[in-house]
Figure 1: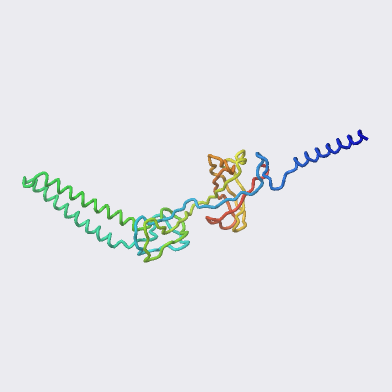
Figure 2 (figure 1 turned 90 degrees about the vertical axis):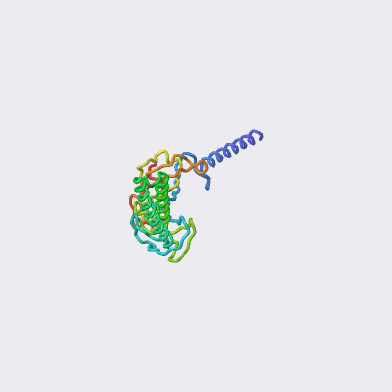
Length: 259
């Protein structure tokens, strides 16, 4: 009897150990995959413009002109909005008149000095007045330049924040622009992808808003892995896409087959 009970006990222990080994070998639902195995989950990406800019006010002012509208194409150097700078313009005109007067006085002093009727110090003071008047003109020129909001590159108007007659303070956003160049996409991919991911690699993705397929060409890979999420940021260019893709759209890519 004792030998039989002992044999039954050993059989139960053996079966229990086998069950534990099988359970350890099976993946547990919800548990992250083992380190070193590529993640099969899709990676999210965000479409961005190659060039983006927010034109903001550097000085306080009131708008006399806003010629940009939502979605308008613009060219580099185009004036999109302007402050009412009539007062600054008037001051600049006055400064130019003072500069002309100072120049005439300087030339007169030079002639008198040639006739030995003016001291050298009088000529130097007249020259200093000319330089001072010209400096005032440059100051007003700089203020007038701040009155106009000029497109720094060719593209489209993404947003207009102001209207004619509206006053703004320094730093207030005026117009947002996106460039007309090729679109880019940025994403954070698992660090395991670095084993095969290199600039020039092409990824297949899907744009959420349109459901259309797109091809992304890797152009840049960050030089550091995020220690917390174990991901690395990459930048790609939109090599091809079915349908229209705009900055701000998003989508997802999966690890290529065979990787």
